[in-house]
Image 1 (cartoon, rainbow, N blue to C red):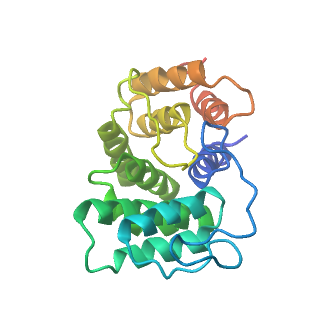
Image 2: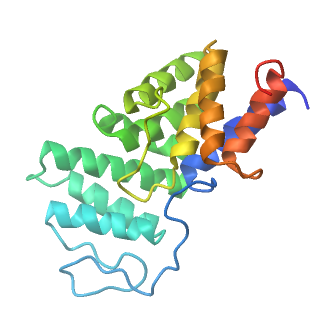
Length: 227
């Protein structure tokens, strides 16, 4: 396998982590119920129901409910509606942008969530993870440096740090550490990369996991370091 294909396989694994198709400890898949009404609207038809609710907190919570059931278009609508509210607080703005970023990512790909994640990543760890994945997908050296910065801000440079998502974004602790391992390698920190990927594998050892795919890509690129 040539170097370009190896890199593409690893980046694809990271994209799949962010888009919810990885192996980690996310929320898993749910069966979409016939109705997911917005609280206060009296029901609706199809995933997400109506969006007549104007209370910002309720809109955000309802958006995440839709997200959980993979009703991403409805979730996007609710997070966007929350962002247009005149009563929006700074904390609610961050929560709404974070939700919007992940709903867009699950709906159309991690790149589509880039702008929303940027609005929330200064203080929200889930958005830092999402924005890091978007930078990794772009495959640029400056992007890998930005991804390292974001993932280190989450605290993942310490193997004692356990990433636990507040919302059902589908990214596990092991996957987050494996993402950092990949970024460390591409920014010239092979020793740190080895520490991170070994830690990730100690948590998630399945041969068909995203973590294993990233490890195998690192091993193919540098068999002396990654054994």
